[in-house]
Length: 338
Image (cartoon, rainbow, N blue to C red; front, side, top):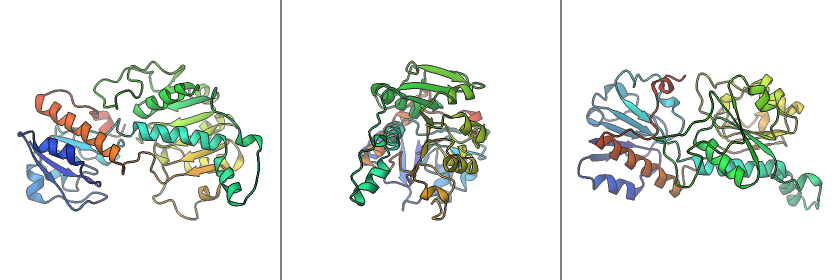
């Protein structure tokens, strides 16, 4: 097996060493590190059977030996339009590697929004002693709605249950177990048994109407782009908070700004945005009921992330070599952006 590694983060040395020790593969790490797609050397590209990358190279069509692409992100829109399925090339993403940090971000944002920690910090900076009731609220007993129930939704559900929150879930067709999907041991809801109530397509308004928090936990696809608009935001209680660690364009920008300005919802925590970086004059920056973070909920610069990512990849290399199903394999429909 000829493996090419082109990642925007340093290789996890124990994982790299484990691959090189196998004896049945050669591993080439492309340097220097680069954020974004770049062409591979034609000689290297022509021999690569396995590509472990952040973004496929522009000359991926020339990679005639390529049989499998592993991307380091949970999102996989960078694979759209490459014709991988037609060429018989399998693709896998890094589902499971981001579940823990993003779920912890979800919980942190719920606490911050509900207790208005932003204002308490402003008060501290101004030496204002204010013990108002808005700073003393608690999460226990609240209802969290998870729109989408992949790994991030499942780990968020587990944490919510530990804290005494009720969990409602909306999916296309209900909840099922998740075989052949990577997860950190002891996390998530692999059998799909934690939600207190499950809604399916067509029941969106009923789902939205009973929430204290709405957490978006779905990929950006043709079906989900602009999925949450004025209709959905107005269906939420005025006391509800929106959390978006998924992708910015899932929520229609103009509708979100109006919802926050006009009080359709109580506030929002946004880790994903409409432009990168978000322009300094964007109205979201100055809204007192909004927390903005710069797409860091997944914590991909931490050693723990690298360890999980390479654990997933090494497991998949073993599965590839032995003819077993790959973890996190993307379907033809997913690769088409449906």
